[in-house]
Length: 422
Image (cartoon, rainbow, N blue to C red; front, side, top):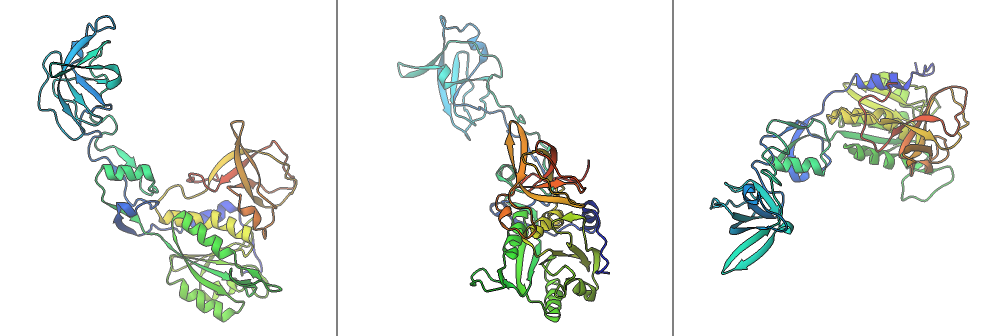
């Protein structure tokens, strides 16, 4: 089964994963802890905003009809009979040619129907009384924020699955959500495989490399909103790998291994999946890098066998693991956002498979421009640091020339429901 690998298209591989996804669990947390969490229930307005007619400025509440004949040559004089701030109500109903000093956010006093900003009125103190002079006319309802002008009661505001940002948090507070229903962070187990791996604090040795993949994957997991659990390194020994993986899969929602998915003498993941009784969804994808990416299902849980090469591992996570985690968090936009961009350099390399090139996207002359962020090889690490997109080049025998319109997947974009549509 594993020696005779038949590659499937990226779109088909993603569909196989999506078809097995299930909703995540829900928990209730304090609004103060809700930043970057995903809402497990839609947010609707339970009252009008503002809940009453209010002043949007510091100024004076007046009767607009009193200014009917006001002009620069004939200013109208109004007596200021009261002052109110936000959260307080006027106690007097103004009579003709009377006004109330009012602060931003205060409810419009009864008997008034317009607001004059401070800078449009001249204050005068005479005989222990305060007056204002106005040199222009005002119409009824000038400078008033009306009840429900921002939001009407019952209006849908934020859909389920949205990540809480400062604006959404303001809405939660506005509508009295001291506690917020959110999706639990999925637990994602991570193994790094390979006897050649050293930990980050260890000195380099001949034939050894430092384990960078687990740190990279943990960061990707956190960025997407899940909780990584690092189980350590696995040496190239079948029984030890099998025992560790079979134990870990029972403790997490998803399990990621990096390395060990090829067909070399020490690549045990295919055999481990077989011994576990896992249903292998696919074990080769028509893509570069990461063609040997393998995904399996065991008792409703997904096991992601990602390449040991850093760039291939990174791409595999973004294309396959990311949507699985985001689906568990309730969002509809589980895939990378796809846009069009102008290729800024020649890319002569041809490939029979679709190629995902770690790239940098920027705006130039009002259009997206894209160029590789480093050397396009699966084992390269340095190209990842400046990558904010994956340049998606279809398979074929030809290369690609500067100035061509190409498709890119934005790593830090808003996301997409399905990026593979033409």
